Image (cartoon, rainbow, N blue to C red; front, top):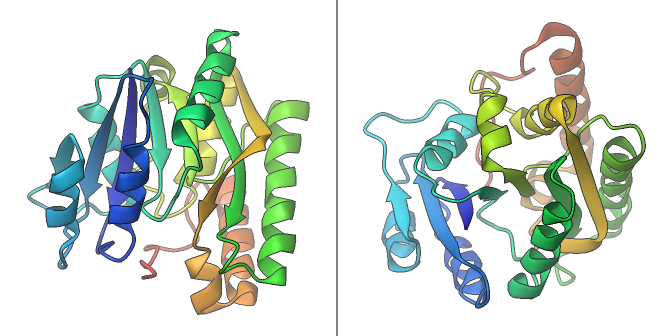
Length: 239
């Protein structure tokens, strides 16, 4: 079984489309788990129509990592797939079968990610350039030098390996996705399947601008590498 875990907070504008697309999965055993971060809109109501489980914690989760871990804690699958609320997996039945077959072909592969693309109708030239570079970095690190790296939009991992590394580091407000993949690469292999891709909105770059987002990415990478902490106390939701 594949357990698909989606952390959400005030995602009423995008989450229904994401969940409906997952309904196209026909040949795989899977469950959808939504982990809510105290939404104040109709997100929870929408998710309850489509998801198998909706987690509503009594106290607000401090980080996205905590929300992901809460979802993983109730997951029944041998494999976990973490995606964002604004992700669309094109032909999800075909793509997930390819990822699953790839992982089953080599038990030492503990995590797989894929390429990221902004929806064509939303994509700017800078989106194409920068996310193209991000995809190349993930491919180089995972497939060439064995230093796990992945954005949080799509992370397909073995459940037992995820438990072995302690899940996501909840003290990190941002960067928990990259750190999780790096830890997996310390005990096995991680891979990036560059010919497979998912779509996302690119909304953070579009709203705050690429210069600011690139600065946040670079400063956070520095803090994680040399200070073992995030550069920010909170990763502000962008909606």
